[in-house]
Image (cartoon, rainbow, N blue to C red; front, side, top):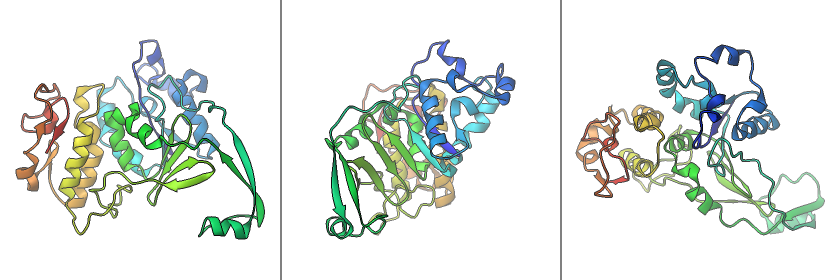
Length: 309
């Protein structure tokens, strides 16, 4: 199955008709018309079908939104959903579930360059999967140069839940305005001018051999998992949540992964064996107020706004 990572956006009561609720769950089990879904969800279904996958997991459809028991039950397994998905579709160019992400690209020049296989090997050493000895390279230009900026600044990167979804997914297919970006356990690639080039991996403080966190890089002889956690939380604290009560739930899957990895006890966003350091968090802005999410005052989760160690 495929998992979808996206921004809900601001929805009116009319817009919320697509959500699964206690009043429509029985009807949903009998089927759901694609045209009744918001555009982002429609695009995700079409992409999944085009790639030959039969199932897709979408939180707004697969969780009964007005059933507290169902939400709490599903929230604690959400990390596993993204961890075990065949791949995750990230609608990074969409600020709302109404926007969609399969847009017509801007018209751009294209050129074909005839080649012979021996020439290809000279230009791109290591290429061995060319099907024929001769053919054409198809170049699209101008080359997309703002992919890193887009992925850093888009609304998808500002949403709290997407951090966990991004880190735990083993493969992510991101749709930006002009190009498709792909990341897996081995590399990070971007579509540009007919050639895929590597990009730097995120979260360098994490370790590459952490099974559930494929995008991490190994520290130079250091294995400080706790520091990696603090780095993630600093990023997370800059993001927004529609519901303040989700503060700890939105990183629950990450916490579960860390807990099994480091054999430590998780306590409201901190780690028992590293409390002496974990308690040294501080708000970046003195104007940050205490959040209304029930977290204890000694936890970073009690604050709304960016924190650091």
